[in-house]
Image (cartoon, rainbow, N blue to C red; front, side):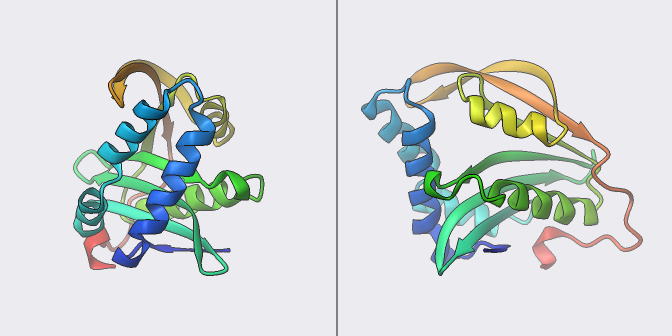
Length: 176
């Protein structure tokens, strides 16, 4: 397995991992809601915009030339805080440490750029996501409502402090 920065060539792989993960992890959503949510959040244009955003870090996990997971995070350099917006591993590749590797690389990259705390959200009804963040040392800090495919769902908010320190030389995600 290899963790690397995503490229425009990875758009289809990211979409496939998202689709298969949502179908596996969100059985409480109707097929129509799943399709609507995936279409809303993972359009070609939306992923390409994330790839070109200098405050965004989009990583993929690749195995045998196939995208098997991804992490999408952003940085707020003024507040020295980051947010893991999305992190998914294809259901057929789970249990191999891919999610942990994606998290570790995301956190290390953000910490090297001066980020010291992270936030993450996951649906309250997603036990795997909630266990994942708790297992990484995140603490639940709140709840909020989010709209997925026309359905309002409760989302848990997690935070983790102390992921890095002020770097000697600050570099920006855009300079990678």
